[in-house]
Image (cartoon, rainbow, N blue to C red; front, side):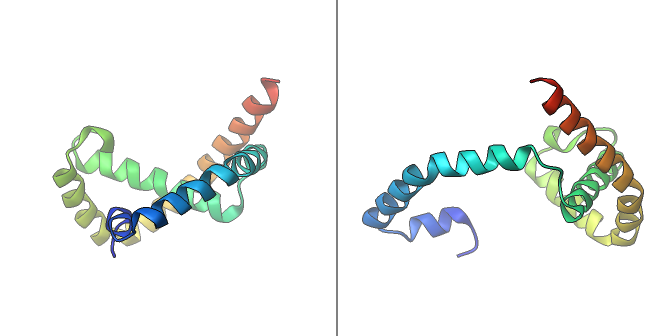
Amino acid sequence: MNSFKEFTEALSIQQRLKIGRAAKRTAKKRARSAKRKAKKMKSPKEIQKKAANMARAKLMKKLSGGKSASELSIGQKMQLGKKLDKLKPKLAKMTKKYVKFARKAEIQRLATLRGSK
C-alpha cells in the first residue's frame, strides 16, 4: 500500500463510512487546534523544513529554465527531482542560507495575522 488511493481502495464500504463519521465528529476540534496552531510561531524544525522547501524551489526553478514547479508537467517534475537528489550537498548549503529568510517570513506572517485583528 504505497499511496493513499491504494489504501482507500483496500477498505470496505463500512470502513470508509466509519472513517467519514470519525472525521465529521472531530472536524470542529481539528479546526480549533489548527486555528490555535496558526497563531503560534513555527518550531525550529518547521522553519528548517520551510527553508529546505524554499531552497528546493529555487534550485528547481533554476534547473527548469525559469519555470516554477507548478508550471511543469509531472514527468518534468520527476526528472528534476532526480537531478535534485544528486545535488543534496548544494541543497543543504542553500537551506542553511534560507533559514534566516524563512524565519523572517514566519515573523512577517505572524505580524500580519496579529495586525489584522
